[in-house]
Image 1 (cartoon, helix red, strand yellow):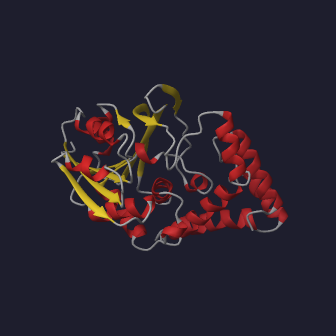
Image 2: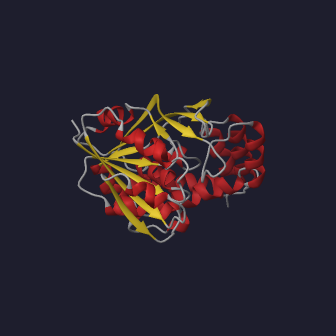
Image 3: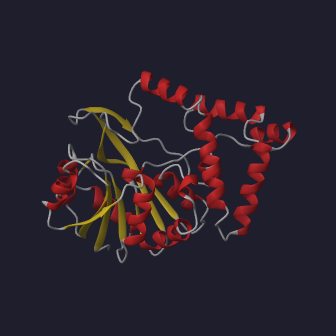
Length: 301
């Protein structure tokens, strides 16, 4: 049974909803001892003052480096715990979120946990449930992330694997900390990944989200067009995957993954063969068709 849990929270001008997040953490019904570590990424509002109201929160005031490097710093800096949880500054955790994750993370193998989430508006009114999940393997993680950072937790053995990547990867090659951790898990055969159908978090949507859910057709279309019909995201995923793959010591995985890269980027015959032998990558059918069309057209060369 896990007894020591670290919450890794990165803040930046989060005064509006930060108390709700912290209170929900300290209201967890868990047998584990929970410590909260916050790296403030150069806030200019009342965020630090709010954090200082909580005596048990350890604060690392820091210069602004962005959300990716901020979470990397927390993973590197905080050690000696059995489980670690990524945490955003504006959500609300249901009281059994930590306990459910810890039940899974209590294993001798490297383990990564993610879950469904309830999307809510700024007043916590329910909007929709997100429970999209693909099998965790390097073929899927090549083209999309299969977990949301604010639902993720991992044990200390997984942290050890992650540090080997964080120490050697460039932040410019990373889409977001959660997509990177999914890729780390996907190329390590020893990692156990659990996706929980239970939604233990209220994922708040508001005007200042760094990354958020697309809750209506207009936001989905706008995002689709802004990212050049999904092409920007696709190329970023491949770039991130290549960066992680270069750091793995598993020669068999590297060979298999390099064959995938060859399949999507070589001549037309090989690209068509790649599409034929791969059943399905993306969870969204339309985006899956688009990925296949991009592959056939040689966009990924």
